[in-house]
Amino acid sequence: MAGLKDIRNRIASVRSTRQITSAMKMVAAAKLKRAQNMVTQIRPYSEKLTEVLQEVSSGLDKNHKNIFINDNESKTVLIVLMASNRGLCGAFNTNICKKAISHVEENYAEQAKEGKVKFYCIGKKAIDYIRKSNYEIYKTEIGIYDDLTYSNANKISESLMEIFANEEFERIDLVYNSFKNAAVHEQIVERFLPMTLEVEEKTNPSEYIFEPEINKILDEMLPKALKIQFFKTILDTNAAEQGARMTAMHQATDNATEMIKELTLMYNKARQAAITNELIEITSGAEALKG
Image (cartoon, rainbow, N blue to C red):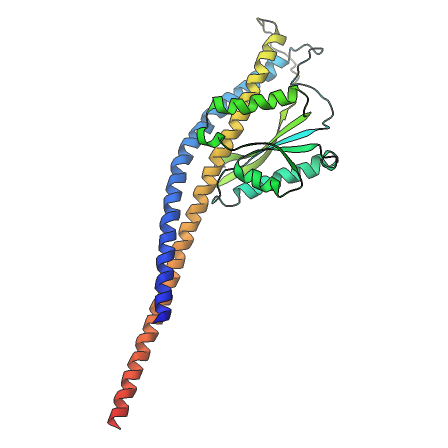
């Protein structure tokens, strides 16, 4: 009977765990819907802003200088790594952190040897991972996910632009998870600064009249484009996190259900064996009394 009691306790424990994972799945699903709506709303705006920026830059004076556009050699590098504050979301955090480290090893090996590669960690899991590595943390941010607004994201993007303008770093890269759907997210490495304006040469270029002059328009647009780009990456990260957590909790709930089935079968077999043994003992005792 002690074995039966142990199995009953295990079944009760797994059922309790299943209730928790099921509740977490529903919470993540609710958060995912809101996060997904925010991402899908900002993407068309971000894409159109980039398109307009490229179009405007086609008429840019080649001698025009802008602090956010240059082709200098990247001797000092800042990696902005975006992960989550909490776990229970599968390999979401581990994969993006490994992606950031491999990006540095493949592209900035020389700078890393000289200690000129640092990390700006967004999310507790990013901080924990980088602290265990051989890289230095330049700055951390963990409160952005608690109040995910454009104004709060602006504070970080503006600080990054200021860091670049003050020449503390000559290259800033963003490493984040891009949201595809609830079950799929892609690890992305994206240049943040300096900006690159890829302009396609047109055989029949459109003629526009710009007011004020095109250089001033571009100088106004670049910071706004950078802010939108950064906000989009934060929203992508948040949506991907909720999708990963919902998927992980769904799998955990299914696994718990399967385990309960196996334990119940084990319990029934053990109970049947115990009953059989009791019947044998009774029968044997009866036969002994007859003798």
